[in-house]
Amino acid sequence: MKKITKPILFLGLGVVLAFPLFSLLYYTMVRTSTPLFCASCHEIQFAYNAWRTSSHANNSRGVVADCMDCHLPAPQDTINFFYTKSLHGIKDVFAHFTEDQSKYDHSLNRAKAAHDIKNDQCLKCHRNLLYITQKRGAMLAHREVLYPMPGYEKRCTDCHQNLVHVQRPYYKYLSCDSDSR
Image (cartoon, rainbow, N blue to C red; front, side, top):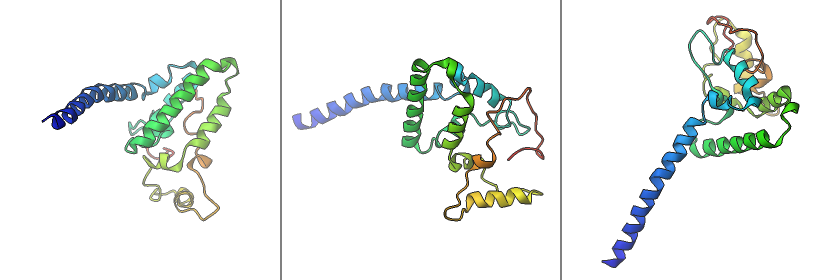
């Protein structure tokens, strides 16, 4: 009887401790995964304002791609998502408190971020790239990205680096015809 009681006690204790821990972790991840949270650091305010005027937040379809959609792996890849999100968060907090914010270079950080964005991150939303009606050039360019020849890999950000974090004087409402997708 004693042999069974000890494992059941440890299992019960594990459940009692794990549930609040995982709930707190999930709550923290949800709360820190919003554009407003990202914009709470003044270094990111420029990127947030530029994103708000871009087609990723303001388009005729009403679709919004937020910070997580582009800068993190898909949430379905849970371990990679949590690892990358934690790594980005630690890096951003460290930079916020240790770097001289008056020397923060938006263009340099924008270039670094664009380099880190993988094609898979764009393809989470932009899946139907080969069937763009009346845009043969775009279809051919996207074919080179989706089916690259060895040694000639192209990135989505090679052509689309000015879609999101570019300062604009106003919100640009795009029609479906002029949408840059």
